[in-house]
Each structure stands twice: as structure tokens, then as C-alpha cells.
Image: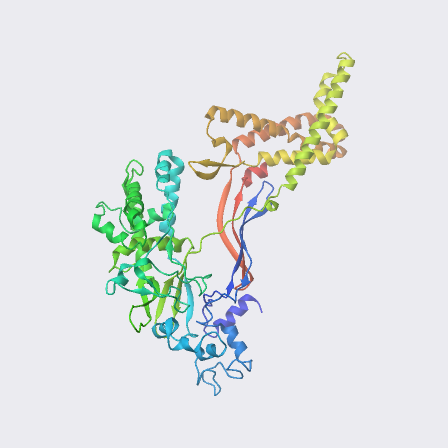
Length: 590
């Protein structure tokens, strides 16, 4: 059945879309590449990301929420599952859940303990959100307005840093290695002695700790139930700039001491002392500095984008959570919930924007737990990028390596033949036909070297003429690709002279292709060969120079991610774009 036929089949039953649940019993692999295309139109993929899909059943925590449709199909065919031989259709006499719940089945197979249904954190979850085993998990993507806002700020500041050493210097002064715990004051308003017994919504409680000292680490794709780590924020400089704009602290009225104290009181270690300066005043001062950002409309525009993004996130009802308890003789476990952008608690909005920054950059996720009782959209813990060195075997240097030595071979042979011709000229005391020396390259190339090597050398010349060389340089601590003609330290006149000189030399190498064509076509041109070959050589040389100078090649980059499933819901293969170091029209003409 074709894909279109399958789509039509499912639509005939009223199915309009298909989406998978969030889970952490397997890791989805992705192979993401971008292509570099040379002057001959050949593309070479370079890897950006490479991970293989893998099962991680031993560390998963999500199957207690819903164990997947595949497990349903297995269970009705297994005599030991507790629902063997039953039906999954509700209206049938042997419906699997007519007299038992999905949670009972999970207890039977050991996924849950019987006590999880009556006491503890998981019991609290079941009462607040819905019975375990019947909860749908959905990944909520960050709003487009949030991504647009953050990218706008990042791109604008990066451009200003690249153009101004002063802006870059002031930006670098904001850098600091920060990592600190936090918790919302909202949970302490009614109970200053509030305790937390866990931050992983999938897990039972851990030994209690005071909310005043911070939170336990949130849920996540790689967070196990045995972890007692603390939840922290690690905001880079850009995140702090985004946060002060998002929280509207860049407005004309500066923050008062009381406001700064209220915001920083939610940071739960010694960082609270540095908070007013490092987290609030320094980034706000940078953005208010009119000598660095002379256009006040720029920050105002960012604030408007941030307001739209915050409204969208508020509509999504993004929350952070902990399992809580109180220091009593018979403590009960409760589900502590706090909306990140709750308008009743604006002092938490700055920290909320730090969380939103991680969400937009895919360091954190938001998971929607959709139960029979309620829904909660939970922010996960942070998982930062892992980096590795580029695989040198991916860089296509083999062809260039052999072409280089082919060109060196041609040069060496021509030098040797020229030396012999010069020696012969000296021995004959100059009594030779001087014009014949102008044909040294043609004769020596065809006779001593051969058409194959001459063709390779001419193709190398055409490739150079059709390619814009890019250099990776550091400009104000920002790495970027630039054309060598734009490098600092050379005047415009020097750059123009060097470009003309190198173009003339490279265009002269195209003559080797003319020699090969002349030799091959001599069978047809016969006695007319001597009449046009000399003129043809210089005509092609001149045209190559004119075309290369009049319409030089430029580089272009396109960003267009396209993905295919190598294995559905297990392995993705993506191409994110292409970098062309040539301009197709001019290259084709040469």
C-alpha cells in the first residue's frame, strides 16, 4: 500500500492526525548533516549530530504512565499478563478492563508496587492528575513567538559584537560562571516550613528537604528515580540579557531595592548576595547603555516581542512541580504546582525567563501529563549539549590531494623540458626559431605529460576560478567565515591588485584545456589547426579573466531541514541545509 493510499484509508475512519507519546524507555537517534557543494555541483555531507536510537528499559520511568499500545497487544496474547485472551474493545463481553484497571495490571507485572496506589508520591499523582497507567504524555514545543524573540535578540547582539570592539568588550564583562538552586516564594507564603520530597513526577518520594534550600531535580529523559540531585539554573550571558528584557526590567523605571530583593530572595545559596548585581543590574545596564545601543526603539521592539511570547507561554500554562510535605507527626504528600508566568507572582518571572530560554534552545522540555482528573504541563530538568571533535575522515581531501600532486607533476615536467630547451638554445648560440618557444607548454604538455594530466590541471584551474575561498576567522571573539578579500590589514587597492593578479594567473591555467581540445580536434581541423590554436589560447585566457572579474563567484548558504525516518519513531536522518562556495551561472560559463 502506498503512503497516499494509507492516508486515505485512515482518514476514511475519521483519523486526522497521528502523534506519539513522550517517553523515555528508548532514545530516538538522529543523524543530521549539512552539505558543502563544490564548483562541479558535487555535494559532500558533513555531520552536525550523530546518535543512534537505543532502548533504555532498565532506566525508564515513563511506562507507569502508559505502557504503550504495543504492550496492550502483547498483554492480550500472554497468559501471565493478567489480561490474556481479553479484548481491548470496550463494548465486548471480554473487555480487559471491565473489572480491573490498568494500574492493577501494572502492579501485577511489577511496574508498580501495590502501595503506590494508596500511599506516597505516586498515589498523590493519581489523585491529582489521574490513575497511573492511563495518563497520556505529550511533548509541548516552545511557542513560535518565544523562538522568534530569542533569535532576534541573539542575532542582533551577535551582529553588534562583530561590528564593534567596544560592544564586544562590554559584553564579555558580563560573563560569569553561574549555577544556583532556586525555588518560588509562592510555596512558602502559607507554609514557611514547606518541605519537598522529590521533583521527579514519575517517582516516589525521597528524604525530605526544605524548599528554602532549593528544589529536587525535575523529571527528564535521563533522570532516574534514585537521583537526589538538586535542581539548578546555569544561565549564560545571553540568557540573562533575554531574561531582563522578557521580565520588562529594561523599561525606563529602574528596579527598586525592594523589587531586586524580592526577585533575588528566590535564589537559594550564596548567589543571592550577588544576584542584584550579576543577574539584574549588569545586564540591564548593558541594554540601557545608549553608547552601545544608540537606538532605543531596538530594545522597545524586543520588549514587545517578549510580551507576546510571555502571553503565549501563559496560555500554555507551563509549570514547575515538586512533591511536598510538612514537618508533622503524620505528614501527607501533596503535589506542589507553580505556573512559571503566574501574574500573581511577578517576582518569579525573571527565573521563568531563564527556564524559557533553556526551553527555546531545547535544553529543557515541557511535558503535558493528561490524566482523567487533570492536566499538568511540567518543565523538565536541563540536559545540555554534548560536543565532540569533527571526524577528519568526513572531510573530502583525497581528490584534492591527488589533484595537487598531479599539478605539481605537470609543473616539474614543464620546468625540466624548459631547462632542456634553454640548454639547447645556449648550445646553439640562439640560432633557433624564437616563436617556437611560445609553444613550449603545448608541445611539452601533449608529448611529455599527456592529455589526462593536462585535463586534470585545467579542471583544477576552473575550480579555483569558480570557487570563493572562505576563511574561518575570529572577529571580536566570534568565529565567522569571511572571504580572504575582506580580511583586515589590507587596503582596498592592495586587495584589488592581488585579486586581479591571481585571477590572471589562474585563468592562464585554463589554457591547458584548450591544448587538450586542440589536440583532440586536430583530426577534424587538419591544415587549419595552426591558423586558430594560437588565437584560441589567448582568447580563452582573456575571456576567463573578464568573466571571473566581472562576475566573481560568491558563497551562499541555505537552511532548510528535511528529515526522513530511517526507522519510524526510532531513527531520524536529516539534512539541515547546504553551503555553496560557487555561483552556478558564472561557474557554468567558465
